Length: 114
Image (tube, rainbow, N blue to C red):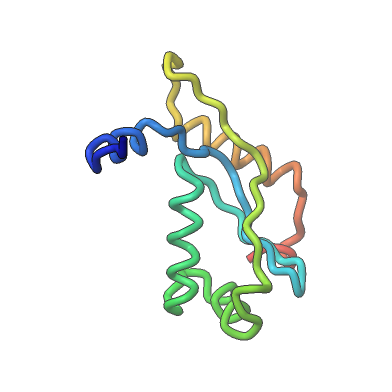
């Protein structure tokens, strides 16, 4: 028996969305744009749409996207924040701490980042 639309929506809302830090890496020059989100998939889709429509806030990244094409960029998960349902944590604060830690560990020079 097929599930109703209501059941499918409810299941989708219950799915765990990946929380953490990710990067968009330029395969041509190795530069990275690092970001974090409490829903990485959604945030990646937003970045991708902004880039496709030419409206991304990071103009250098946008210019490289326009010049090189979408196939020269990849999304890479750097670190995932694991949160249990019963955890009483400030997700935004934990995510910021994780982001800062990842950026520090990567130790990228200014010319390696967007």
